[in-house]
Length: 375
Ligand code: UDP
Figure 1 (cartoon, rainbow, N blue to C red):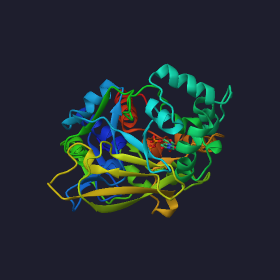
Figure 2 (cartoon, rainbow, N blue to C red):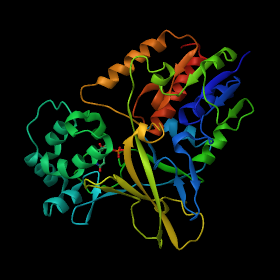
Figure 3 (tube, rainbow, N blue to C red):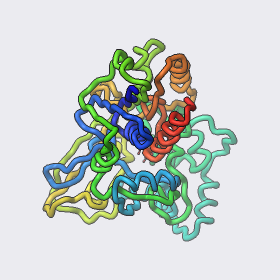
C-alpha cells in the first residue's frame, strides 16, 4: 500500500501524520523549511532565551479533547498570558479592555462591572447591525477606546482601516467589565509546553510509520507515489493563482538584546501609536523561556507587512468586511473539490485565521474522517 503524503510539518500536518500513523498508515511528511513545527518553531538564542521564531504562540483552548491529545507529546506548565497596551503618555493599561483599562483611560474610579457596563453603554454608538470592525467596536465600546486601542494597531497590522475589516478579526479580543486581565481569560486551558514547541513536534512526529523530509518543496508529480495527500500549502499557489491571489499579512521580527532581566509581570506590550511596530515580546516572562542565568534578555518587536515583502512568508489570511477574499477562497475550494486524492488543511490550505487549538481539532477530525472512509 502506498503511503500518504502530508505537506507541511506544522500543527495541521503533524497532527494528521500522527493520527494516520497510529492507525497503521505510513506517512511521508515534507516541508520546504529546514525545520519542523511550522510557525510554532522555537529555539534558544545566544542570550539563553527561548524565542518563537514566527511570533508568540500561546496555547489556550476550551476544547478538553485537544488539550488532552497534545499533552501526550509534552509536559505542559500553566501560563496565564497577559498583555498591556502602551498609551501615548507612556502608561500601560490591560488588554483586553477591562475595568482598570476604563479607569485609566477615562480617569474614572469604577469599582464594579455594573458601573463599567453602564459607562460603556453610555459612550457606545447606537448601531443595531454592525457591518464591519469599526461599527462593531463603536457599538460596544465607543469612539475613544476604539480609536485608542484598535484604530492605529489595526491599520499597522492589516494596512486597512477598521471600516474595511470584518468584525470577526477584532472579536478575537473579548470586551470585559471586571478586573480579570488574562488575555485568554475565557479559556479553561492555558498552558505552554515545558520544553518548547519544537520538542513537542519532535515527539509528535517520532513514530516508526512517519518519515520527515525537510527542505523539500511540493510538486504535483509527487502525487503519483502516494495514495492520498493532506496539503497545508497555500491553496491559491497549488492552483498556480489561476483565479487570483489570496493575500496574507506577514511580520518582520526585530530581535534586540537588552540589559537586565526585567521583572515585568506581562510578556507582551501592544503599541497604540501609529509607528511601524504592533507589539513587543519579553520572552523570559513566559515560563521556562530563560534557559540559562543571564544578565540580559531578548525583546522582539513585530513589524507587519505584506507577505510579498517578507519572502512570501504567509502568516495571516485577510478577512475583510465585504468577504471578497472569502469568496475567492470559495472558488479555489470549488476547484479542489474536483481534484481526487487531495485535501487542503491548515491556515494556508483553508485560508482561515485559526488558533493552534482550532488547527489541532480540525486536523484530528479530518484525519479520523479519512480513516473512516469519509472524504
Ligand atoms: N487588535 C488591535 N489592538 C490591539 C490588539 C488587537 O486593534 O492592541 C486587533 C487587530 O486588528 C488584530 C486583532 O485585533 O489583528 C486580533 O488581535 P490578536 O491579539 O488576536 O492578534 P494575533 O495575536 O493573532 O496577532
